[in-house]
Length: 303
Image (cartoon, helix red, strand yellow):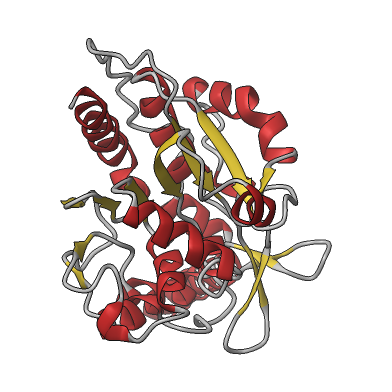
């Protein structure tokens, strides 16, 4: 009897181990890149969001818009050579867009060269009607965005259409944007013109571009505090198969070295406003980040 019980327990343990092993392995896609494992998707994504559909009584009716710069790159090569299928995170992108729209601000979507925006569709909250609706509303722009290179070259310096630039999260924000000279010019232009800068989760990685043509002592965000996705959490995610390997670099550490302080230790709902830089820590912060951004932009246009 005891032997039978031991065998049963051993079988249960073995079955549990096998289930965990197979559900925690990243899923390979047609192009050879990997999306998060079934276990990671269950733990890290949700079919709905906490969007609260805030009504802004002093809704903006002017012509100032938000310039959203998105990634056009999809695959991140990890430290082990495997490719992570990424892009911009739909919740971190579209929940704040909902708040900005409710507050009366139109959004122009840009990528570095005008190629389509890459979105982590595996993270799309399929049961959230508000997010799905704004995705469809802007789908044409996602597929045919404006060209940042041309904007910077031809019209940026004399442009007064925008009140803010917005860098949505997703690991894709670490691809192409931090080393892009046009992003460098965009960030410094917006900062010098006293515009707002909005960035959530991995979006602050793009702020690194502001230092491409200067030393760290003249980094425009030196001394700032931000909320952002912590490097330490990124180090843990391969264990549950969210990514197929460890990160190629630590963007938070690079920002720290330039004099930026990340105030949160967890991937939580922390938001932060330091002067005209507004940041959020993770998808859990997307609603609060969107509300803070919309509220501060409305204050900005009322002055």
